Length: 270
Image (cartoon, rainbow, N blue to C red):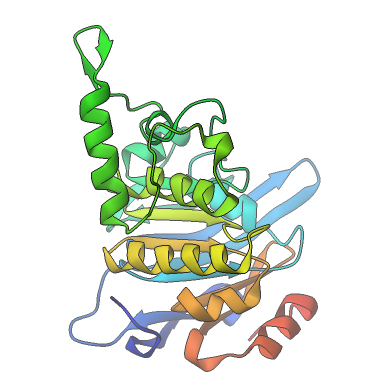
């Protein structure tokens, strides 16, 4: 796992912003690299030339006020939006996604804020939604149950009854299922949009621990959250967005809550 102390600044991003590079051993290649990403909706410039690298096994916190460009940027990474300009490389290869299916084929998964779970389907059905295991023309429920238990056990997620309807579960359990679904199909990049919003304290702790376990498996995690204190529990680096630009990037050990608040509100480049 990459820790905050394993990076140093080298190179330059948009507007003079320095980009982090690992320094322990040989230079590591970014899992995904964005250069000069731009996106306009009508007269609104949602992204104005964003540079960003995400490395294997790290969690990057993506923060900013409303309309800062966070969601637009992650939707570009996940294939929902096509950028108007700029390049995306993955493991050194230039890629261009025509839609979310293309991104998923490249092992990019996203857990949306609304979780995209089917309340009236059980835990197993949600975990394998769109990836059902069949035996001939029929669902292979027994194999799905066995594989679902393995998926949850590998992430240390405790769901006693896998045949329970999702609507009967707690908010934390529902969030864990959404993360497990995305994390159990060999993702290289996992984007999480506000995973701890509207959760009780104990459930927040469980989700943050789950993020750390996913990261420990070598997955590159991008975390969007307004709960800034959560960033210091799971993130290695933090990128701050302001009005469509990345105005700052920090190693987690080199910043504070007060520093981040000033950057988010003021948008000063650092």
